[in-house]
Image (cartoon, rainbow, N blue to C red; front, side, top):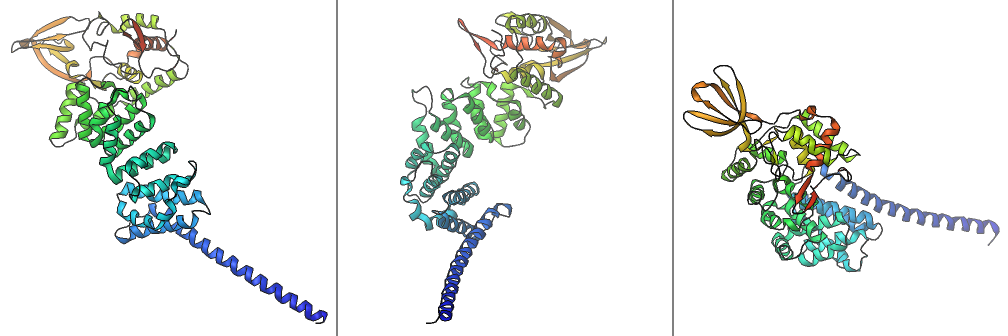
Length: 454
């Protein structure tokens, strides 16, 4: 073969190799384009209407196909795709639809135990096994302890969606014993269950109240206040003295106050009135002031208990009794109105937001033009009696009354902060933030670190 032939042969071989490389490249591009299109289609699905009938199942099938293609090539993307699909299915109650789709990747998730705890595929594999009923609820929840918090939350939701009775049974076995504190994962599961199925969890969660952290109690109240039945259970526990009424904020009460409803809602409304009385509409100006004082207290402001005692005697004791000192025109505050720091600040600066039924004031206009406001403490056909500031009882003959009205606002005036300097307000808050427990003093929950001067 001459030199020209050899060169031609080499060129031909080079061209053939180039063609083969190009074919492989195009095939791979085509495959990845398909993956990208499938993934894109799934990711934009939440922005459109929820599919019906076979379209729902088809969308989940698309997600599992993407996850299958990426399972080894890109574990993180595979896990995120499946996680999004599972979360949507649980939220929308489409368990059967996604279960059929997940069956196509059952072989991939069967080896979940061999995946490291930090592998993003481990949690979705456990969720898949739960949805396919290849794992018991107890096994799935037990395996969740080692997972990141966000993954545990979804796994708990999946378990509830698959078999809520088993989850409730498991929680019952963990709660209500002699242990002084519920462990972190059990508490987390309880909170998730209360959010998903508040009515079913109301009695169980409130029975474990003393075992829960302060943060968990606040989250439970948010969940239980969503439905009339679960809120009624909570309110009944408060009325029985098992739970402090300070855990419920006025907005959680206000939304139930005037809503029309069935016998259950009416029972709830009656219980709320018995415990809290009239709940007023939030005053934006007052609430802004509350937020300002709370912010300053959390960011360096402080108060003196000793100076605060003097402020209380001067400003508050004419209407309130504390530790046996003062007058009981308004609520006796030794054990009321200061369950936590936020409630204390709100009660002082926005007193009309929550008014106990026994402390709604009555205003009397006499025939000679006098106006007197106080707490109604006695009434007959011939006279009424009001308790006014300083604990004094005044009596009016009905013949001397031109008009009377039960006020919607508290007898305690708004603008109490104007009767003192800002520092005196912080001193008063510091004084009222300390409660006597036997021979010891304790600071109420929520007081910022360092706020009460030592």
